[in-house]
Structure formats: structure tokens, C-alpha cells
Length: 222
Image (cartoon, rainbow, N blue to C red; front, side):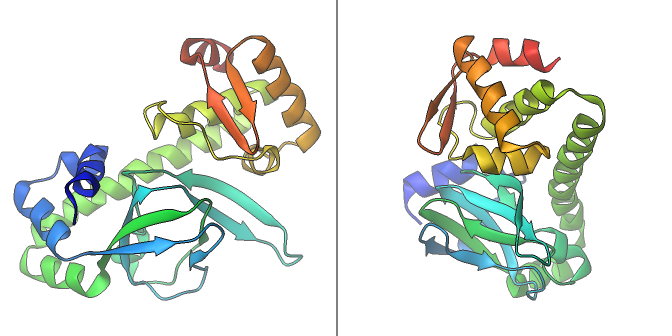
């Protein structure tokens, strides 16, 4: 692994707070994967095969109904780990994960993780913390959907997605995908985004949104 790739992994909140031994194990038992935009990493129903962290690009988590309509649940940016749910129950993958853009991942196989945990069961708690982070985000999203106005939902979702990259990069996100994530219509999303542009809170590009003023979004979200 190259130094800049390891530096990306080290930036992640979960990884940087782990023990040196666990960090070394993960870094020495994984491999690099490269995906083209819109290429599937795994699909709902696939067998569990390990955990991943994004080195560059953006990954998309989604589900598809019986009519083939995709519902985007979230996006995964650089330094974020995912795929840990099946580490615990050894069940099948729960959602589809695609490369939203060209992406590079670091992948630690399930077999290596199982060997580690059989010798060092104390590390289960470390992976449990990763799972707990995802549960917190899920509960926050459920509360957001139940209690907030349409504008608040959009602002909260933009803040949540931007926070994953420390507000340092545009979000590779179309208006339709944002509509799917907030359970709003595309027309409503467009109206809200145009209001946010006029308030200089965000800027819009081709299938991307850039947060310009975090404090304005936070005020509108609350």
C-alpha cells in the first residue's frame, strides 16, 4: 500500500482510534480494488466476503423495488469503512453497493477477519463500535424523516453527507438521488436547492452539490 493510501485510511474516525496491532493487521491483510463509475461492488443477497474502506471516489448504497426503481440510501466517501454487518451474522448482503464515481477501495477478506477474531475475540468490540456508528446515523435519519420539514430534511442530509468528507469536497449527488434519500419529489428538491443557492449556503454543478456555508445550513436544519 502506498503512503498516501494509508494516510486516507488513517483519517477515518473509526480506524484512527483503534489499537496499533489491529491497525497493522488490517493494513497487512487487505488488497486494493479499483471500480469504474456505476460498477457494482456487491448486490443484495450476495454472500458476505469482508469489509471495505474507500480510498478515493464515492460509493452508493441503494435498494431496488420490484419495479426496478432504485432508492438511494446513502453515499460512502473516502476513509469510511463499510460491510461490517455481515461480519457479525454471516448473513447475506442487505443492500446494493455501486461505485458512484470511479473509485478505489481497500478490502480485508472475511476469512482473514474470522482468523483474527478467533485468536483475539476482544477485537469484536472494536468492530462493534463501527457497527454502532452506523446505527447512530440510521436513528438520526429516521428521526429526521419523522419530525422535520422538507427544507430541514434536505439541509440535514447535505450536512450529514458533507461531514463524511469534513466539508472538503463537492458531493457527487444528483437532485433525483437526493430526492430518493429524503423521500421528497425532485420538484420539491429543486425548489429547496434553489433557495439554498440564493442564500449562498450551497452551489450547484452537474450532478454535484457543494456546501459553501455550514453555519447557514445548520441554522436552517434546526
